[in-house]
Length: 325
Ligand code: PEP
Ligand code: MG
Image 1 (cartoon, protein in one colour):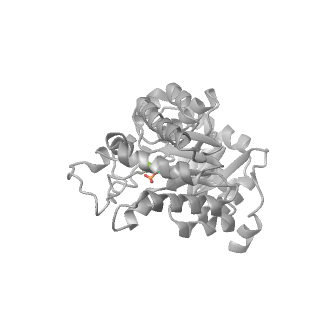
Image 2 (cartoon, helix red, strand yellow; image 1 turned 90 degrees about the vertical axis):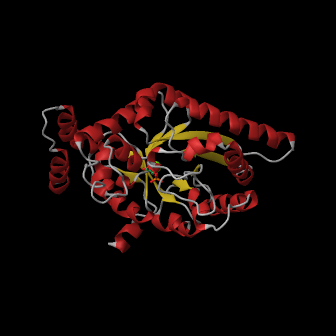
């Protein structure tokens, strides 16, 4: 198996009916980087910058952040890297940062909320990213965005840092792209303004499922209770793709479900042409896509997603389709 996947490493993921799907990997530390070439990922679709902060015993200084980001870009060569700004709070605790205890951390003061309220921290990170990406493309992504206004505020901070860079005659990125995670359900009702406000979006299906189904992703009693391959969730994901397509905004998905071939198949079926997953999943997902005919899958999936009859046989139908092909 492993050897077989290695043979696919430099082969693009093109389905039987000619759809190309970009396969990227999730990462968060330098040790992840060798997997990029080994797995044949096209880029890093999600770089979780909070990991550097979580493994450190004191707050990483700006030069330490810059060094990490520069090393990541260096070892990625020409492959695109999407850096997500700090997603701390909730289940991601920094031992050296005193935070008020919260009754519901998943719904609390975290990620971009904290970033906008403590702009010093976010601005330092943006500056580190700008320095590290001098002369090349910089892709920045905001976590836990709930309202489009938060993107505008973050962009204003980014613009200020770029202006500062110029004033000091520092090198700047050749191009800056600002994107947003889609992982808070409120964004689903702002899709048109969202797609116009960003250069790309990435669906965080882990949190989106958690918040949609009101079930804690870290609580084993409820975490797997609701199926990401249920009709309602696949419809939700398809709505995001359609919203992105209306505005020609690039869309990808970087939650855990992209790592599972059956789910990745369903995601291709509802329109995703880019996914980001664990490095180990790229081989199996690529093998699945090379054998897949999306047109034939849609013929099965679309009518099932159109129904609303109380029964949800979507997963069973996907399994049956995968076995028959
Ligand atoms: C997600 O929520 O799906 C996601 C990719 O981000 P994280 O798992 O880091 O919250
Ligand atoms: Mg998330």
